[in-house]
Image (cartoon, rainbow, N blue to C red; front, side):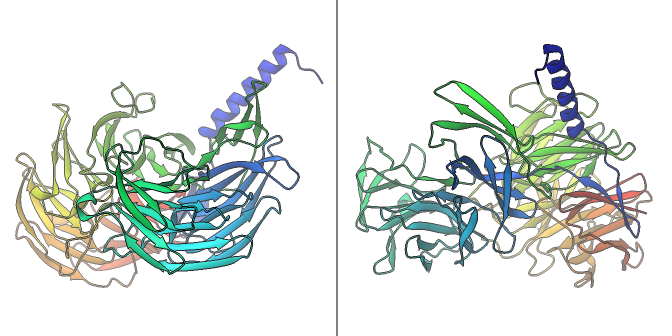
Length: 637
């Protein structure tokens, strides 16, 4: 059947309207019972954690995609590149964690190792054909040696495993290098004699040489060469392995062979042996018949394959099952809507409780934290510790640095802050404070102060607050002061140095610490703080202990070690406390909503939730909103 130009226009127009409908759709909320409601999935799609172009058993071009949603990496998707017909394969082990490295072998098998399991997928047989428990926990680097043996090196303890696809022999060598911080071994390579080398970071880079014949491993880099960041190794076509202490231009090259390494200074010619492997961003686009992947979009569920010789492209639609993106939290915007961000994919969502309509838009990074001041919303975004300002009354314009957008990019705090944990809107209607943990390999995060009037910022490092700690929770105090609660946790891949977390009081104008103390022995995180009645501060420590703090007397006036309700909700930016319309205070626990008695401080479970409460949390128009997995839910008070 032939379509006229007008008919094609109508079909295209209807399809465009349908796409807009999908991105701004109306969803009927589901009554969960007990006063709880499910308003829908915040971002109804998954994220890729490795993509390769290959062939199936019939010689057809197919695309393999590791799928990731809020549950972690949960399946492998196979898409026919010509028809879009897809098949989804469930993992042969329990869900949890995510793919950080994968490899397509020379024999057309797809490998990865995560959540303590090494797996082989055969696209010819359309099945997982090998699965074995391995030393914890996730492969950060993978390689194939000259005999076709697959190697992987794992986070967090530099564990090494090997698998021989011919003999089906799997060897787990355990941890080969010990440090007091979680190691990110991002590269691994083998020479043509079978010796193995891997580069790791982030606190202090190192290269380790491993002799699989004797089982012995030895570090190569001298202490003076071990800078922050990750070391790098690669296999050259000459049969040797080369590496240096940094992936960047700096650093002295080493040559490795037969388990030994020596400095060679500059390395002028790099001839990397082709191996189809990479981190979670792996995207191998080339099919064996000369075609290549041009676009693979899990959001719109479309695949575009181009024929570089014929200079043509073919677009097909595909489908897959998803439980929705990992949702970081939820807040209320000035226009009476609920909003927040998701991770993998990095998206912004907005829900209108009056109409039941949703918006889902691209986000500038991972919107970890948010706060409202007046008619604006401020987002703290990972990575880079970015602060953004959003005006909901104006059209959304995707954020770009040094451009007029909405949300507007204001500042970046990396490496002082990389992973935001709190945005505080101060009652002066002018100051915004951003806190969080520092960059990869660092210990101790600072504070970023944004002045709305002057449109500039001040960055305060941990050495001027509490050394080797980061601020996890913040609350405003009278007199232009803030109360901060710290965490001893370092930046990703960093070294934990502090033994106990602390509370502190800082004067906003001078940025000086007036007081600090480790008021609760042994505490590692002051998870959240909230202003309660009579000027007292309610707090949660280590996601379980409830306390009341008097900021004037600077002492704890009440402590409940065990609430009997288990763990509180909380993610990278905990929103555990929710203030109600009469200044009453609620606490979000994993299994329900608890109310605080302002006189006795007794905690009472007012509603057990039919779904787990993973993170919070805000009050709006008679309801407490929270996140369960990828779903926006609420409880009607």
